[in-house]
Amino acid sequence: IAAEEGFDLEDVDGLGDGGHAPLPVLAVVGRPNVGKSTLVNRIIGRREAVVEDKPGVTRDRVSYEAAWNGRRFKVVDTGGWEIDVLGIDAMVAAQAELGIETADAVLFVVDATVGATDTDEALIKIIRRAGKPTVLCANKVDGPSTEAEAAYLWSLGLGEPYPVSALHGRGSGDLLDAVMAALPEAPPQTFGDAAPGGPRRVALIGRPNVGKSSLLNKVAGEERVVVNELAGTTRDPVDEMIELGGKTWKFVDTAGIRRRVHLTAGADFYASLRTSSALEKAEVAVVLIDASETLAEQDTRIISMAVEAGRAVVIAYNKWDQLDEERRYYLEREIERDLVQVQWAPRVNVSAKTGRHMEKLVPAIETALDGWETRIPTARLNAFLGELVAAHPHPIRGGKQPRILFGTQAGTRPPRFVLFASGFLEAGYRRFIERRLREEFGFVGTPISISVRVRE
Ligand code: GDP
Ligand code: GDP
Image (cartoon, rainbow, N blue to C red; front, side, top):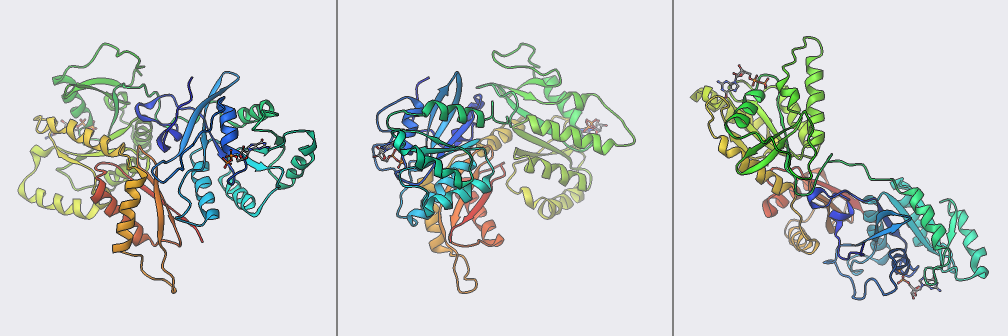
C-alpha cells in the first residue's frame, strides 16, 4: 500500500469518513532534530524527505500508512505547526500532546548522541500522563561506538532504549518489532460494523409508550422495507433496513422495540440497557417524546444518554395529533426550560398515528449527520478564534488574562476541539466559545466537545 500524504486528524482518529476499517495509530514524538522525519521515512520505506516545505498551521498533521510483518498501521509525524505562535518548547509539547492523544501507541525518539534534554523531560511527563504504550528509540546510533550512549537512556524510565540509526537503517527491525508489540491489533471500534457507503445507522429511542413501535411500523409499513441485502453490509437480525426519502437506513436494535417486553420489576433497567446498546451501534439517535404528556425525567435522561454517547441527535415530538392549545403552550415552556442542553438538536413534530410530518424526519436526520461530520480547517478555526478573542477577551482574573493561543479540531463524529490557552478558561467563557462556534459553523444536531490545554 502506497504511503499517503496529507491525512488529517480525522484519519488519525482511525475513524475516517465512511467508516473504513480503522488502523492502529503510532505517534512519533520527540523534540526537533532528533530524526523523527528520517525515522518515519525509514518506517514507511522511503528515502526522500517527508516534508520539504515549511509546515504551517494550514497543514494539520502528516500521517502515513505503513506495514511491518504483514500488519498495517498509521504513522503520525508529530510536528509541523508554525513555531512563532508559542515558544518552541510549548509548541513542541502541544504538538506532542495532541499527537499522543489521538494515537494508540507512542514512539519516543531521543538523539542518543546528545542525551536527554529538558525538552525531552517535558515530553516524557506528557507521555506518562497519557498512559499509552511507549517505545523508546535512541536514534543516531550509527555504529557500535555510540551504543553506550543509548544505554544511558534506561535512566529515563521508559523501558528499553532501542538503539537505531534512522539514517542508515541500523536496528530498525528490532524497533519495529517492539512497536508492533505495543500497538493493539485493531483500535477499539466505536461505530460497530461500519461499511463504507453503507446505510446510516439510526437508533430510535424513547421511554415506553411514546410511540416507538408505532413510528417504526409507520415508516417500515408505508415505505418499502428493504429485503435485499446491500452489497458489503452485514445485517444483524435485530436491525431493520428501511427505505426512507430515497435512501436506505438501518434502524438498529428494532427487535427491542418490536418485542413488547413487559417486565414489572426492572423494566426501567431493561429499557435503559436497550437504549445504550442501540446508541452504541448508531450514528444518529432519534429521541421520541410523547408531546401530549408532561416531559418526564426519563425523557431528559434518554436525551443525555444520546449526547453523552456522542451521537447526532434529532428530537421527535410524537402524538402531535393529540395536542390542544393549552398543551402546546406548556410544551413550548418545557422545551425552553428542560431541553436547553439540546437547543441545537433539530425538532420534528410528528404523529405516528396520522402520519403527520413523517417526511420531515429524514431531512432532520440528514442535517444532524452533516453537523456531526463537520470539519473546520485549522486555518479557518484559528482565524475565527483570533477575531473572537480580540473582540471578547477572557475576563481578567487575579491580574492575569488567559488567552486562547490556537485551536484545532481533533476529530469529528462528533466534532471535538482542542484549544491551547495561556491560562485556565472559565466555564462561562467556554460555553461562550461553544455558542459562538455553533453560530459561526452550524453544528446543528450534534454535541461538540471542547477541551482546553493550559500552557504556562
Ligand atoms: P526531526 O526534526 O526530528 O524530524 O529530525 P530530522 O529527521 O529532520 O533529522 C534531523 C537531522 O538529523 C537531519 O540532518 C538528519 O539527517 C539527521 N539524522 C536523522 N537520523 C539520523 C541518524 O540516525 N544518524 C545520524 N547521524 N543523523 C541522523
Ligand atoms: P412504544 O412503547 O414507545 O413502542 O410505544 P407504542 O408504539 O407501543 O405506542 C404506545 C401507545 O401510544 C399505543 O397505544 C399507540 O397506539 C399510541 N400512539 C403511538 N403513536 C401515537 C400518535 O402519534 N398519536 C396517538 N394519538 N397515539 C399514538
